[in-house]
Image 1 (cartoon, rainbow, N blue to C red):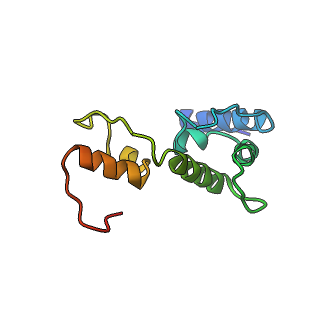
Image 2: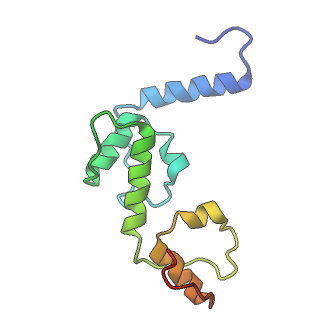
Length: 125
């Protein structure tokens, strides 16, 4: 219950919580490869939906795993699935900052370094 003088931010938070609760038992219908879904977007789903998405991908979680744990497991799964796929980044890395680059598998990052003639020390991971 919001107080009469609730701020816009409090109202938005309450609306988003309500929306998440309304959809808690509905399938999220995400693409199997999670294309277009990153951590922040996944976090908008209800924990029940996240558990279902993990189950669909045979990701084993402890009973009662939190939404944060589900999101981390899904992102790890996604990264592993894409490990040998080319990242197809623009040569100048336009639009790719550190956090976005960190979402790639290490194999993809090594390939991107090689494409740019960046020499890595042995054992770089």
